[in-house]
Amino acid sequence: MLKKKIAVLVSGGGTNLQALIDAQGRGELGCGEITLVIASKPGVYALERAKNAGIEGRVLSRRDYETIADYSKALADEMVAQGIDLVVLAGFLTIIDEQVYNAFPNRILNVHPALIPSFCGKGYYGLHVHEAALEKGVKVSGATVHIVTPECDAGPIVLQKAVEVKEDDTPEALQRRIMEEAEWKILPKAVQLFCDGKITVKDNKVYIGE
Image (cartoon, rainbow, N blue to C red; front, side, top):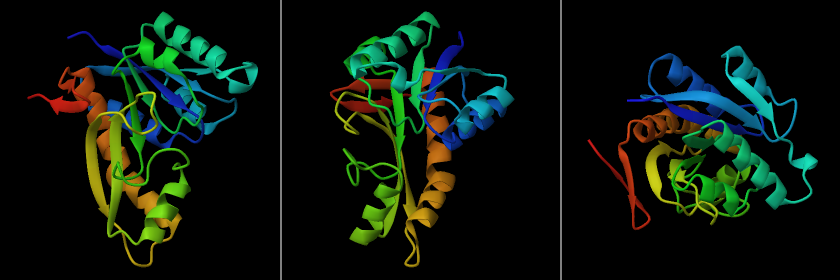
């Protein structure tokens, strides 16, 4: 099977990118290969991670474009030109429009640090997710990998993993445990399933083949 080219979109430190790079190093991305990392702003540490792994890093700064539409077009055009098969949002905090979704239908994955449909949608990102979970007093939280659609956090769910919430948890402690026990495990697995042709989307649901 031909290698599937993966682009990872980042806006910060790139911990999920590193999990993908490490999985690739262990041969755990199946027929997938990360060939491009795009940052929405210059100077982020994720670009260093890409460089250290010998992966091409590009900066497409949101500030360089007047509108979301202009930025989305540039992003989609760049990835299409590079022959990208799968797009992974790994802490990518820049809004994009339907031009990207249309260019990569059912080919964009995102990891969210909660069990969707809990604590998701507009405003639920970063520590806000974990603060809300602790405020609610949930006993388990976790992470979800889903296919990205124009509606925030509403796309078909690929994988989920639950993580215990402890009574003395801080948002930071819960964030770290969810990353280590869930995000860094299910994101590479979802990428592998996609690249190996195991994912089918029907009626807004994901079916995983043998």
